[in-house]
Image 1 (cartoon, rainbow over the protein chains, first blue to last red):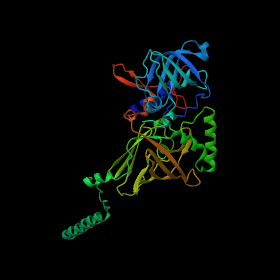
Image 2: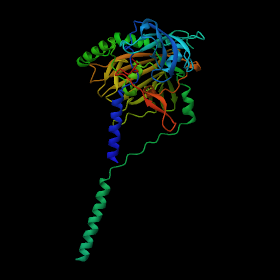
Image 3: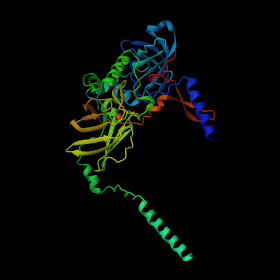
Image 4: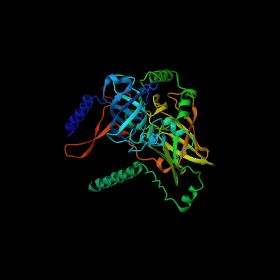
Length: 143
Length: 276
């Protein structure tokens, strides 16, 4: 039994290593993104992952400042669902797959990767705007 | 002869029985938590109103990270300077790895998530929004800290009221629990940390947590600092369940058609691995 368990453990660890999955995660700083730079992507929502501690949004589209890349899937990270509700007026159903959107974001410093920190999302059909600045929830007049 | 042998056996057995009785350690009396009375519940109404959702003032955390640093010892100060440099360079150290709780007192110091505070007879309970924050049980029933240390992420907390101020004393915090001043700057306390807090309303919807942190393995002196939380009451801002590890997984279907979670790939800094 013990031997069997050991084998399973080794297999599990090997699997994680093979997949390149770091056993690190959780609340993280966002300085891997270049906050001094803003880019804009226009495209369709692929997936909104409404999860703690960081919501993510995948968009298939063209980045204006990287037009040479053509159409591609970019992954945007944000703060937690609760903070997005408070700071940016988000809802779980703010966007759904296929919605046409424009997103302003700060790109990853690693320019080889198509990722960013979402700053502002505009839904094309409704004109609704959602932001993601966690410090906005300190503004006066919040209920 | 036979009667002598029998007598000897009786004496030996009797001695053994006596010795056994003497060696048995006295079982400590079981302490019973008494059931709260109607008066205990009525007394809760005399406490200040801390209901609602309390949000950290992050801009003040940002400011204090630079203007009011802890008195780090020389070795840790060098580590901290490197962390600041790494963060500036886009390589933020992942202090809260593995979805472990931010722990005490870093939850109070650097959290970006809301909390709520519950009063029940003999207890104050702090509940965090994301389970990286978890919960704190603060006993206000007059008990002391336990004789035997059993370290945990949030330690053992006892509290008492001085007017409208809750005074909390916390020990037995895990040595791995970080003393953090931002999400990317902080070090494990390495043991023997002691935290005293004075928690009080500074205004109608402003809560102050005044902390005095003694951490002899990493600080040269006790560190005093204050953290600010502001209140919201709109129902749309109610705290909902937030499980930290869901960020490490995504939804999928297994071979039997069941809904399951499967791991996603993360970088060493904790963010998602974006496509190339």
